[in-house]
Length: 551
Image 1 (spheres, rainbow, N blue to C red):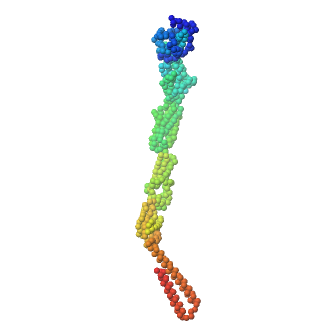
Image 2 (image 1 turned 30 degrees about the horizontal axis):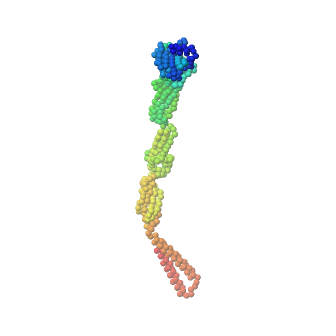
Image 3 (image 1 turned 90 degrees about the vertical axis):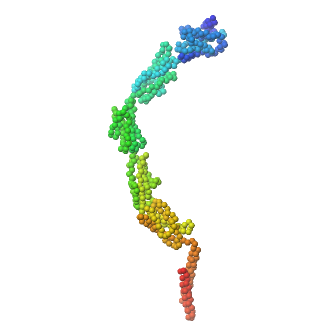
C-alpha cells in the first residue's frame, strides 16, 4: 500500500524531486556499482529505497525495495533475476554486466514526506579480445601500392579504432603511398563489434627490415616484417686487408649490391683477368707482392656494365748496401758507403756505431783509428724495416801523438807520459829504465803509457811505439831533480859568480896600471925592476883566480 502511494505521488504530484541524469561506465562481464544519490542521505533517515530500470516504450521494471529496519525485497525477474543486490550505501550492485545493461536505472528514496528520484545512465565498455595482423603479403615492391595485411580487433565496445605503425610511428593515409580501409561488424547476439583495418603500402628501400604493427586502446599486435624487392642500382667493391698492406699479406675482395634479393654471384676483374664467383660475393688473394698493386673491379654477372673499382697498393721496402762484412783499411784511406733504397713510399734512414745512435751518416773519406767499429744502417717505412751492417778495422803504423812530463804528487819523481795511436795495439818502450805507473785501455786506436823516473843529471829520454806496420820515436829533455842538494847547489853557484867578478876586477886594475906605466918615466933601474916584479905577481894572481873559477 505504501509502495503504491509513493509511486503515484512521485508520478502525479510535485512532491517528487528528480535529479539530473548521471552516467556510470562499467566493464563488460564485471559487477557494476550504480550509486543512489552518491550516498548523500543517512541510512537512518531513509524510510524507503527502491531501484527500477527503464524497459523502453515508457515502461519500467522493478528490481528491489528496502524499507527502514527491514530486509531487502528483490522483485527482479527475467534478465536481472539473481544479478542484483543492494550495497550498504544504497547503491545497486549489478553482476555480469552486458551490453543489454546499457540503459537507465533509477533510485527512489523516501525521506519523511519527501520523495526523490536519481536516474543513472549505464554504459558498458569492452576491450577487444585480441589484436592480430592477417592476410599478410609475402613481400613488398618498391613504388607499388601493395596490400600489406589486415588488422582485426574482435568483440569490443565501443568499436575499436585501429592505428597502423611502422617502427613505432603512426601511419596516416595520404592517398598516395599509404591507404587504410576500415570496417566494423556488430554481433547481433552480444552487440559487440569487430573492427578490421586493411593497410595498402608502397614500400621504399628504407623499409627493409622495418617492423609493422597495429594498436588500439593500449593493445599492440605482434610485429611483422616484409621482404622489400627492388633492382640493383649500386654496386660497391670493398678491399679487406690489414693496413698498411705489405708483401706477404692476404687480401679479400668483397662485392656488395643494393638490390633485393641480392645477386648470388659476381665477376671479379683481376688486372686483365676476369674470375666469376657464382655462389658468393668474395674473392681472396693470398701472399700479395708488389706486383699485386693495381686497379681491381667487380661487376654483376647479368649486367657487366654495373661495376665498382678499387686500387690496391702493396707496400714494399728493399735496400742494397755496400760494404758488408769485415772491412780492413789503412789510416788515412777512404771508405765509400753506397746505399740504394727501393720502396713504395718515403723511407727514413738511421745509423748506429757500436750500438750507439749517430746523428748523421758517417763520414769515412779519411779514416782515423777512432772510426773503427761496427756500423749498422736501418731503413724504415711504416711497419717495414731493413738493416745492413759492416765491421770497420782501421790499421797502420803507430805514431806518438804527445810526449810530456810532470812532477809526481809527492814531488820526488818525474812522471813521463807517452800518448800514441795505431793499430794493432802499439808496444811502448823507453830509452831509460823507469817504473810503470799506468797503461790505459786500448780504445779507438789510442793508448797512454806512464812511467816515473829519478834522473841524477840532465838527460834526453825517448818514447818508442811500434807494431807490425812500423814504429815512431819522440824525445824529451828531462832535467835532474834532487831536492836534498838544493842549498849546496845554491852555494856553489854563488862562489863561481864571486870568483868571476873578482877576476874581472883584477884584470881591470892591471889594465889601468899598465896604461900609467907607459905614460911616466922612471929614474932608477930599481924602479923598473920593481915594476917588472909587480907585473909578474899580478899575472900570477890573475891565473890563480882563473883556475879557481874553473874549479
